[in-house]
Length: 169
Image (cartoon, rainbow, N blue to C red; front, side, top):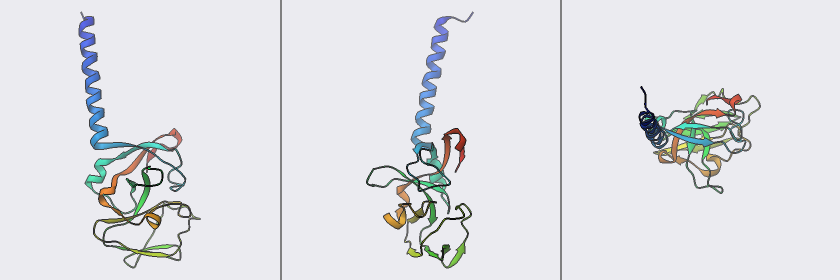
């Protein structure tokens, strides 16, 4: 017969296991992220909440990944942007088109009416260029400059709430 003493012992064991697993997940693998503002519309909306993957950042990031950046800003919030430029690349926008090292690169994630003003930016070693998908209002690398690899702390975003936005971005 199952005794109350055994029940509480098992309950305590399960509770400790949950705490340890949660600690490991949040310390090394996942980080909670709340999206602020409209700079990533239509991909992400204000107040989308989910988890970004620290471990994916360690494995490697690639062009067009959604990344989380630690930057000292006016409001000390993490930035959620799209990775556009990688180290030692030349990024140019000419007539609303992206060119990387002189070659056209399609951005099929942008809204049809998205517009990016012309500019050019050359990245050095360990420098990354990020932009919001809502180009007209986004404060991104065009405002802050490039970011180091150490400032990019996670990539991809699993949106959990609101439930209508559920999915990996």
